[in-house]
Length: 432
Image 1 (cartoon, rainbow, N blue to C red):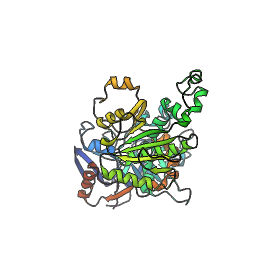
Image 2: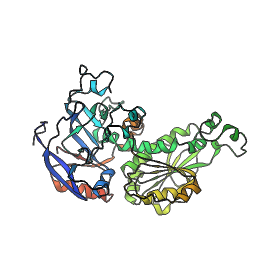
Image 3: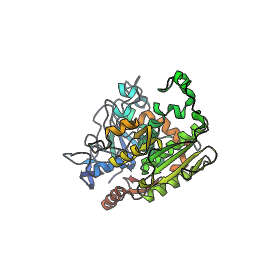
Protein backbone atom coordinates (compact mmCIF):
# COMPACT_ATOMS: atom_id res chain seq x y z
CA UNK A 1 0.00 0.00 0.00
CA UNK A 2 1.46 3.37 -1.05
CA UNK A 3 2.50 5.85 1.62
CA UNK A 4 1.51 8.71 -0.70
CA UNK A 5 -1.81 10.38 0.02
CA UNK A 6 -4.64 10.14 -2.49
CA UNK A 7 -8.18 11.30 -1.87
CA UNK A 8 -9.30 8.23 -3.81
CA UNK A 9 -6.93 5.85 -2.06
CA UNK A 10 -7.27 3.06 0.48
CA UNK A 11 -5.69 3.13 3.93
CA UNK A 12 -5.27 0.82 6.91
CA UNK A 13 -7.05 1.79 10.12
CA UNK A 14 -8.04 0.38 13.51
CA UNK A 15 -11.81 0.31 13.84
CA UNK A 16 -14.09 -0.79 16.66
CA UNK A 17 -17.17 -2.86 15.83
CA UNK A 18 -18.43 -3.47 19.36
CA UNK A 19 -17.20 -4.14 22.89
CA UNK A 20 -13.66 -5.60 22.73
CA UNK A 21 -14.04 -6.06 18.97
CA UNK A 22 -11.07 -4.24 17.41
CA UNK A 23 -10.13 -4.86 13.77
CA UNK A 24 -7.36 -3.67 11.47
CA UNK A 25 -9.10 -2.95 8.17
CA UNK A 26 -8.66 -1.42 4.73
CA UNK A 27 -10.98 1.58 4.35
CA UNK A 28 -11.17 4.64 2.06
CA UNK A 29 -8.71 7.42 2.81
CA UNK A 30 -10.26 10.64 4.15
CA UNK A 31 -10.95 13.64 1.91
CA UNK A 32 -11.11 17.40 2.38
CA UNK A 33 -14.77 18.01 3.20
CA UNK A 34 -14.77 21.62 4.43
CA UNK A 35 -12.78 24.77 3.70
CA UNK A 36 -10.90 24.61 7.04
CA UNK A 37 -9.93 20.92 6.81
CA UNK A 38 -6.47 19.40 6.63
CA UNK A 39 -5.41 15.83 5.91
CA UNK A 40 -2.55 14.53 8.05
CA UNK A 41 -0.44 11.48 7.34
CA UNK A 42 -0.24 9.79 10.74
CA UNK A 43 3.32 8.86 11.70
CA UNK A 44 2.54 7.97 15.30
CA UNK A 45 -0.79 7.42 17.08
CA UNK A 46 -1.31 6.88 20.79
CA UNK A 47 -3.41 4.33 22.62
CA UNK A 48 -5.00 6.17 25.54
CA UNK A 49 -6.84 5.04 28.64
CA UNK A 50 -9.87 6.96 27.35
CA UNK A 51 -9.97 4.59 24.37
CA UNK A 52 -10.59 1.75 26.80
CA UNK A 53 -13.98 3.14 27.83
CA UNK A 54 -15.12 2.65 24.24
CA UNK A 55 -13.31 -0.69 24.01
CA UNK A 56 -15.10 -1.93 27.14
CA UNK A 57 -18.50 -0.88 25.79
CA UNK A 58 -19.08 1.88 28.35
CA UNK A 59 -19.45 4.78 25.92
CA UNK A 60 -22.93 3.91 24.64
CA UNK A 61 -24.11 2.20 21.50
CA UNK A 62 -23.03 3.14 17.99
CA UNK A 63 -24.64 2.07 14.74
CA UNK A 64 -21.53 1.57 12.61
CA UNK A 65 -17.79 0.95 13.19
CA UNK A 66 -15.44 3.91 13.45
CA UNK A 67 -11.69 4.57 13.58
CA UNK A 68 -10.26 4.70 17.11
CA UNK A 69 -7.72 7.06 18.68
CA UNK A 70 -7.30 10.74 19.48
CA UNK A 71 -3.53 11.21 19.91
CA UNK A 72 -1.43 11.77 16.81
CA UNK A 73 1.79 13.07 15.36
CA UNK A 74 2.06 13.39 11.61
CA UNK A 75 2.70 15.37 8.45
CA UNK A 76 0.27 17.65 6.65
CA UNK A 77 -0.40 16.22 3.18
CA UNK A 78 -3.40 18.29 2.07
CA UNK A 79 -5.03 21.59 3.07
CA UNK A 80 -8.44 23.07 2.38
CA UNK A 81 -8.98 26.35 0.50
CA UNK A 82 -8.91 28.45 3.72
CA UNK A 83 -5.16 28.04 4.10
CA UNK A 84 -2.63 30.52 2.74
CA UNK A 85 -1.86 34.20 3.24
CA UNK A 86 -3.99 35.20 0.25
CA UNK A 87 -7.03 33.10 1.12
CA UNK A 88 -8.81 35.33 3.62
CA UNK A 89 -6.85 34.11 6.64
CA UNK A 90 -6.32 37.61 8.06
CA UNK A 91 -7.82 37.88 11.52
CA UNK A 92 -8.13 34.12 11.87
CA UNK A 93 -5.97 31.73 13.94
CA UNK A 94 -2.39 31.92 12.67
CA UNK A 95 -2.45 28.31 11.48
CA UNK A 96 -4.51 29.32 8.44
CA UNK A 97 -1.69 31.54 7.19
CA UNK A 98 1.27 29.51 8.46
CA UNK A 99 0.48 25.81 8.01
CA UNK A 100 1.80 24.23 4.84
CA UNK A 101 1.94 20.80 3.23
CA UNK A 102 4.95 18.91 4.59
CA UNK A 103 4.82 20.49 8.05
CA UNK A 104 5.07 18.12 11.04
CA UNK A 105 2.23 18.56 13.51
CA UNK A 106 0.37 17.22 16.50
CA UNK A 107 -3.37 17.59 17.00
CA UNK A 108 -5.36 18.42 20.10
CA UNK A 109 -7.61 15.45 20.89
CA UNK A 110 -10.76 17.45 20.21
CA UNK A 111 -11.53 20.03 17.53
CA UNK A 112 -10.73 23.57 18.70
CA UNK A 113 -11.65 26.38 16.32
CA UNK A 114 -10.02 29.18 18.42
CA UNK A 115 -12.73 31.53 17.09
CA UNK A 116 -15.81 30.91 19.28
CA UNK A 117 -16.69 32.34 22.70
CA UNK A 118 -15.62 29.19 24.57
CA UNK A 119 -12.21 29.20 22.88
CA UNK A 120 -11.78 32.92 23.61
CA UNK A 121 -12.21 32.08 27.32
CA UNK A 122 -9.69 29.22 27.16
CA UNK A 123 -12.47 26.62 27.37
CA UNK A 124 -11.31 24.90 24.18
CA UNK A 125 -12.58 21.47 25.23
CA UNK A 126 -16.10 22.92 24.90
CA UNK A 127 -15.52 24.69 21.57
CA UNK A 128 -18.67 25.42 19.59
CA UNK A 129 -17.22 23.20 16.83
CA UNK A 130 -15.98 20.54 19.23
CA UNK A 131 -15.77 16.98 17.98
CA UNK A 132 -13.76 14.22 19.65
CA UNK A 133 -11.35 12.27 17.48
CA UNK A 134 -11.95 8.53 17.68
CA UNK A 135 -15.69 8.74 18.28
CA UNK A 136 -18.84 8.07 16.21
CA UNK A 137 -18.86 11.77 15.27
CA UNK A 138 -15.26 12.00 13.98
CA UNK A 139 -12.91 9.38 12.60
CA UNK A 140 -9.86 8.86 14.78
CA UNK A 141 -6.08 8.90 14.58
CA UNK A 142 -5.26 5.17 14.63
CA UNK A 143 -5.07 5.16 10.85
CA UNK A 144 -2.63 6.03 8.10
CA UNK A 145 -4.43 9.30 7.33
CA UNK A 146 -6.88 11.44 9.29
CA UNK A 147 -9.06 14.44 8.45
CA UNK A 148 -8.63 17.40 10.82
CA UNK A 149 -11.60 19.82 11.00
CA UNK A 150 -10.87 23.48 11.86
CA UNK A 151 -7.24 22.56 11.36
CA UNK A 152 -5.93 26.12 11.72
CA UNK A 153 -6.83 25.90 15.41
CA UNK A 154 -6.76 22.17 16.10
CA UNK A 155 -3.31 21.41 14.73
CA UNK A 156 -0.14 22.24 16.66
CA UNK A 157 3.22 22.62 14.94
CA UNK A 158 5.67 20.04 16.30
CA UNK A 159 7.74 21.77 19.01
CA UNK A 160 11.51 22.16 18.91
CA UNK A 161 13.83 21.18 21.76
CA UNK A 162 15.22 24.51 23.00
CA UNK A 163 18.54 22.91 23.94
CA UNK A 164 19.28 21.07 20.68
CA UNK A 165 17.29 23.07 18.15
CA UNK A 166 15.88 19.80 16.82
CA UNK A 167 12.29 18.64 16.79
CA UNK A 168 11.25 16.90 20.01
CA UNK A 169 11.10 13.12 19.61
CA UNK A 170 7.60 12.17 18.39
CA UNK A 171 7.29 9.55 21.15
CA UNK A 172 7.59 12.37 23.71
CA UNK A 173 5.93 15.19 21.79
CA UNK A 174 2.78 13.12 21.27
CA UNK A 175 2.14 13.49 25.00
CA UNK A 176 1.17 17.10 24.23
CA UNK A 177 -1.85 15.92 22.23
CA UNK A 178 -3.68 14.82 25.37
CA UNK A 179 -2.17 13.24 28.42
CA UNK A 180 0.43 15.80 29.50
CA UNK A 181 -1.95 18.80 29.28
CA UNK A 182 -4.61 16.64 30.97
CA UNK A 183 -2.26 15.79 33.83
CA UNK A 184 -1.33 19.46 34.15
CA UNK A 185 -5.04 20.38 34.13
CA UNK A 186 -5.70 17.97 37.01
CA UNK A 187 -3.01 19.64 39.12
CA UNK A 188 -4.02 23.16 38.12
CA UNK A 189 -7.70 22.66 39.01
CA UNK A 190 -6.74 21.58 42.51
CA UNK A 191 -3.89 23.96 43.30
CA UNK A 192 -5.70 27.08 42.07
CA UNK A 193 -8.99 26.33 43.83
CA UNK A 194 -10.06 29.01 46.36
CA UNK A 195 -10.13 26.42 49.16
CA UNK A 196 -6.36 26.01 48.88
CA UNK A 197 -5.46 29.71 48.75
CA UNK A 198 -5.09 30.02 52.56
CA UNK A 199 -2.76 27.00 52.56
CA UNK A 200 -0.60 27.71 49.53
CA UNK A 201 -0.72 31.51 49.35
CA UNK A 202 -1.32 32.81 52.89
CA UNK A 203 -0.01 36.29 52.04
CA UNK A 204 -2.82 36.70 49.50
CA UNK A 205 -5.41 36.60 52.28
CA UNK A 206 -4.51 40.15 53.29
CA UNK A 207 -5.20 41.19 49.69
CA UNK A 208 -8.67 39.70 49.82
CA UNK A 209 -7.85 36.72 47.56
CA UNK A 210 -9.79 33.59 48.50
CA UNK A 211 -12.92 33.41 50.60
CA UNK A 212 -11.30 34.39 53.95
CA UNK A 213 -11.94 38.04 54.70
CA UNK A 214 -8.77 40.00 55.64
CA UNK A 215 -10.56 41.42 58.70
CA UNK A 216 -11.29 37.89 59.93
CA UNK A 217 -7.71 36.79 59.24
CA UNK A 218 -6.44 39.59 61.49
CA UNK A 219 -8.46 38.19 64.42
CA UNK A 220 -7.15 34.63 64.22
CA UNK A 221 -4.44 33.74 66.74
CA UNK A 222 -3.42 30.38 65.21
CA UNK A 223 0.12 30.04 63.86
CA UNK A 224 0.88 31.18 60.33
CA UNK A 225 0.20 28.79 57.48
CA UNK A 226 3.82 29.31 56.41
CA UNK A 227 4.88 27.14 59.35
CA UNK A 228 2.51 24.26 58.66
CA UNK A 229 4.41 20.99 59.10
CA UNK A 230 3.23 19.62 55.76
CA UNK A 231 0.37 19.52 53.29
CA UNK A 232 -0.72 16.23 51.77
CA UNK A 233 -1.99 15.62 48.24
CA UNK A 234 -2.82 12.42 46.39
CA UNK A 235 -2.91 11.14 42.82
CA UNK A 236 -5.25 8.18 42.29
CA UNK A 237 -4.32 6.15 39.22
CA UNK A 238 -0.77 5.76 37.90
CA UNK A 239 -1.36 4.93 34.28
CA UNK A 240 0.21 7.29 31.72
CA UNK A 241 -2.20 10.17 32.49
CA UNK A 242 -1.74 9.63 36.21
CA UNK A 243 2.05 9.83 35.90
CA UNK A 244 1.68 13.05 33.91
CA UNK A 245 -0.57 14.41 36.67
CA UNK A 246 1.97 13.33 39.30
CA UNK A 247 4.84 15.04 37.48
CA UNK A 248 2.74 18.19 37.02
CA UNK A 249 1.78 18.24 40.71
CA UNK A 250 5.39 17.74 41.82
CA UNK A 251 6.55 20.49 39.47
CA UNK A 252 3.97 22.98 40.77
CA UNK A 253 4.77 22.14 44.40
CA UNK A 254 8.52 22.51 43.78
CA UNK A 255 7.83 26.02 42.49
CA UNK A 256 5.74 26.59 45.62
CA UNK A 257 8.71 25.71 47.85
CA UNK A 258 10.24 29.06 46.94
CA UNK A 259 7.28 30.82 48.58
CA UNK A 260 6.78 28.81 51.77
CA UNK A 261 8.65 26.65 54.29
CA UNK A 262 5.98 23.96 54.04
CA UNK A 263 6.84 20.37 53.22
CA UNK A 264 4.56 18.65 50.73
CA UNK A 265 3.54 15.01 50.84
CA UNK A 266 2.06 13.18 47.85
CA UNK A 267 0.45 9.77 48.00
CA UNK A 268 0.69 8.15 44.54
CA UNK A 269 -1.90 5.38 44.45
CA UNK A 270 -2.62 2.47 42.15
CA UNK A 271 -3.99 -1.05 42.52
CA UNK A 272 -1.17 -2.52 40.41
CA UNK A 273 2.28 -2.81 41.94
CA UNK A 274 3.85 -2.73 38.47
CA UNK A 275 2.36 0.70 37.81
CA UNK A 276 3.53 1.99 41.17
CA UNK A 277 7.06 0.81 40.35
CA UNK A 278 6.98 2.32 36.85
CA UNK A 279 5.72 5.64 38.23
CA UNK A 280 8.45 5.65 40.89
CA UNK A 281 11.09 5.08 38.23
CA UNK A 282 9.74 8.00 36.18
CA UNK A 283 9.97 10.28 39.22
CA UNK A 284 13.49 9.10 40.06
CA UNK A 285 14.62 10.16 36.57
CA UNK A 286 13.86 13.77 37.48
CA UNK A 287 17.15 14.03 39.44
CA UNK A 288 15.98 16.87 41.70
CA UNK A 289 17.21 16.80 45.30
CA UNK A 290 14.01 18.53 46.45
CA UNK A 291 12.02 15.49 45.27
CA UNK A 292 12.27 12.65 47.77
CA UNK A 293 10.85 9.16 47.60
CA UNK A 294 9.74 8.40 51.13
CA UNK A 295 6.89 7.77 53.51
CA UNK A 296 4.54 10.39 54.86
CA UNK A 297 6.56 10.44 58.08
CA UNK A 298 9.74 11.52 56.31
CA UNK A 299 11.35 14.61 57.82
CA UNK A 300 14.04 16.92 56.61
CA UNK A 301 14.59 20.07 54.61
CA UNK A 302 11.63 21.51 52.71
CA UNK A 303 10.81 19.27 49.80
CA UNK A 304 8.19 17.15 48.07
CA UNK A 305 7.92 13.66 49.56
CA UNK A 306 6.23 10.96 47.46
CA UNK A 307 5.02 7.59 48.73
CA UNK A 308 3.64 4.92 46.37
CA UNK A 309 0.72 3.06 47.88
CA UNK A 310 -2.04 0.56 47.19
CA UNK A 311 -5.59 1.88 47.79
CA UNK A 312 -5.98 -0.34 50.85
CA UNK A 313 -3.00 1.33 52.53
CA UNK A 314 -4.04 4.99 52.37
CA UNK A 315 -5.19 6.90 55.48
CA UNK A 316 -8.48 8.76 55.72
CA UNK A 317 -9.01 12.51 56.15
CA UNK A 318 -5.46 13.54 55.24
CA UNK A 319 -5.48 15.27 51.84
CA UNK A 320 -6.11 18.90 50.99
CA UNK A 321 -6.22 17.99 47.30
CA UNK A 322 -6.79 14.74 45.39
CA UNK A 323 -6.22 14.23 41.67
CA UNK A 324 -8.54 11.45 40.44
CA UNK A 325 -7.32 10.10 37.11
CA UNK A 326 -9.11 6.73 36.84
CA UNK A 327 -12.70 7.59 36.01
CA UNK A 328 -14.34 4.97 38.23
CA UNK A 329 -16.84 5.29 41.11
CA UNK A 330 -14.48 3.49 43.50
CA UNK A 331 -11.77 6.08 42.82
CA UNK A 332 -14.12 8.97 43.53
CA UNK A 333 -15.22 7.30 46.76
CA UNK A 334 -11.60 6.81 47.78
CA UNK A 335 -10.85 10.47 46.98
CA UNK A 336 -13.70 11.60 49.24
CA UNK A 337 -12.55 9.31 52.05
CA UNK A 338 -8.96 10.62 51.84
CA UNK A 339 -9.95 14.29 51.75
CA UNK A 340 -9.80 16.61 54.73
CA UNK A 341 -12.66 19.07 55.32
CA UNK A 342 -12.67 21.70 52.58
CA UNK A 343 -10.62 19.33 50.41
CA UNK A 344 -10.58 19.66 46.63
CA UNK A 345 -11.02 16.70 44.28
CA UNK A 346 -9.88 17.33 40.71
CA UNK A 347 -11.19 14.59 38.44
CA UNK A 348 -10.01 14.17 34.84
CA UNK A 349 -10.82 10.47 34.51
CA UNK A 350 -13.53 9.81 31.91
CA UNK A 351 -16.64 8.88 33.88
CA UNK A 352 -19.12 6.64 32.08
CA UNK A 353 -21.05 5.33 35.09
CA UNK A 354 -24.39 7.16 35.46
CA UNK A 355 -24.62 7.46 39.25
CA UNK A 356 -22.50 9.62 41.53
CA UNK A 357 -21.01 7.33 44.21
CA UNK A 358 -20.63 9.82 47.08
CA UNK A 359 -23.72 10.52 49.22
CA UNK A 360 -24.62 14.23 49.49
CA UNK A 361 -24.33 14.17 53.31
CA UNK A 362 -20.64 13.24 52.94
CA UNK A 363 -20.10 16.18 50.61
CA UNK A 364 -21.88 18.53 52.98
CA UNK A 365 -20.28 17.27 56.18
CA UNK A 366 -16.78 17.63 54.72
CA UNK A 367 -17.36 20.77 52.61
CA UNK A 368 -15.82 18.95 49.65
CA UNK A 369 -15.32 20.69 46.32
CA UNK A 370 -15.13 18.92 42.97
CA UNK A 371 -13.72 19.99 39.62
CA UNK A 372 -14.57 17.62 36.77
CA UNK A 373 -14.20 17.48 33.04
CA UNK A 374 -12.31 17.31 29.78
CA UNK A 375 -9.02 19.17 29.54
CA UNK A 376 -8.90 22.29 27.31
CA UNK A 377 -5.71 21.10 25.60
CA UNK A 378 -5.25 23.98 23.14
CA UNK A 379 -5.50 26.60 25.90
CA UNK A 380 -3.07 24.78 28.21
CA UNK A 381 -0.56 23.84 25.53
CA UNK A 382 1.97 26.61 26.40
CA UNK A 383 1.99 25.55 30.05
CA UNK A 384 2.29 21.87 29.08
CA UNK A 385 5.21 22.66 26.76
CA UNK A 386 6.98 24.48 29.60
CA UNK A 387 6.36 21.56 31.93
CA UNK A 388 7.79 19.16 29.34
CA UNK A 389 10.89 21.32 28.96
CA UNK A 390 11.46 21.44 32.74
CA UNK A 391 10.74 17.77 33.42
CA UNK A 392 11.76 16.16 30.12
CA UNK A 393 13.73 13.36 31.80
CA UNK A 394 10.60 11.89 33.39
CA UNK A 395 9.20 11.10 29.93
CA UNK A 396 12.27 9.87 28.04
CA UNK A 397 11.24 6.21 28.45
CA UNK A 398 7.51 6.86 28.68
CA UNK A 399 6.37 5.06 25.52
CA UNK A 400 7.05 1.41 26.26
CA UNK A 401 6.13 -0.08 22.91
CA UNK A 402 5.31 0.96 19.35
CA UNK A 403 3.12 -1.44 17.36
CA UNK A 404 3.02 -1.59 13.57
CA UNK A 405 0.06 -2.26 11.29
CA UNK A 406 1.59 -5.35 9.69
CA UNK A 407 -0.43 -7.84 11.75
CA UNK A 408 -3.96 -7.50 13.11
CA UNK A 409 -3.16 -9.81 16.04
CA UNK A 410 -0.47 -7.39 17.26
CA UNK A 411 -3.03 -4.57 17.31
CA UNK A 412 -5.60 -6.69 19.13
CA UNK A 413 -3.02 -7.82 21.69
CA UNK A 414 -1.98 -4.21 22.33
CA UNK A 415 -5.55 -3.37 23.32
CA UNK A 416 -5.86 -6.51 25.46
CA UNK A 417 -2.62 -5.77 27.36
CA UNK A 418 -3.46 -2.12 27.86
CA UNK A 419 -6.93 -3.05 29.08
CA UNK A 420 -5.29 -5.28 31.71
CA UNK A 421 -3.05 -2.43 32.83
CA UNK A 422 0.10 -4.20 31.68
CA UNK A 423 3.08 -2.02 30.82
CA UNK A 424 3.30 1.65 29.98
CA UNK A 425 2.24 3.88 27.13
CA UNK A 426 1.58 2.17 23.77
CA UNK A 427 1.72 3.86 20.36
CA UNK A 428 1.01 2.71 16.81
CA UNK A 429 3.15 3.27 13.72
CA UNK A 430 0.66 2.87 10.84
CA UNK A 431 3.43 2.51 8.26
CA UNK A 432 5.41 -0.28 9.90
